[in-house]
Image (cartoon, rainbow, N blue to C red; front, side):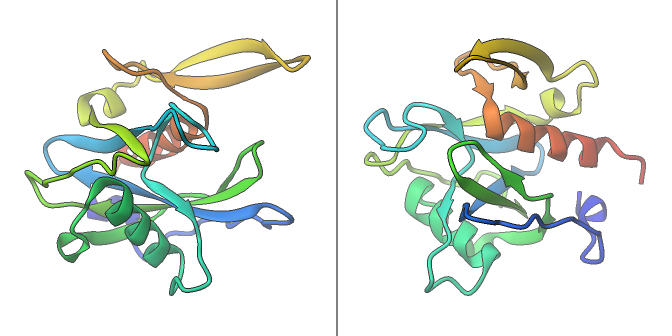
Length: 180
């Protein structure tokens, strides 16, 4: 996996404009998959949705990577001492006003995670077998707020993985599927 995210790998950061800067951690556990959360139904933004651990970049954060690690520690109890940052995916802007920078990292095998009950309802893993399946994700179309929109949906037995999270996972899958 490290070979897919070399430090010199070009990524196009987007102009944040008036969007709020945010960072998410794309936490990959070797032999298992990518860790996701189901957000608490009581949250103001994206309540009850599947997400990558992350949130707003604070002025006190040393950068995007520091923000992603801080948020993962707060939301899922990730011990950041054993985390290895291996790269970033392209920035992503969502309709709710956030400019998201996805940070890709390896976490130790058998990592112990615990949800912060104020922010996270559940923590679960999307297996590498699903991410690497060339038939996934599915493309769906819906009518919302007067417009037709298309979006990715990843299969999971218990959760619907769609929206910005599904799009970021699609970028991840494309990177992982590339020949070395």
